[in-house]
Length: 119
Image (cartoon, rainbow, N blue to C red; front, side, top):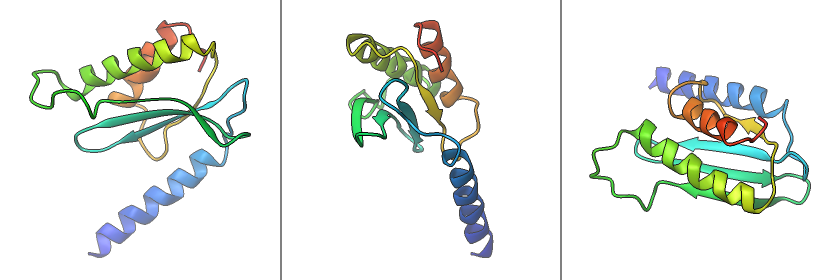
């Protein structure tokens, strides 16, 4: 039980450290990533107005499909890219929370960069 509390405490410290350095504006909103064991959620937030500009998740996709979680993250990033293009957003600030920059998080950022979004 003590190790769980220590891990959670370390996560919260890391999250505060990462989020303390970034802030989304209307010209450069914040891309927030949330990973669960099964799903991935992406939100683009304007912190000045406290509004979510665009969001995407794989919650509606078929869970029994043969795709890996990283492949589903690439599909979600494509959906988010389309939404950002319609809203004419071309620059974002990445809020990875306490997650490492690898796997699903890295795949999302790579897809968005290939689509012309400056992160």
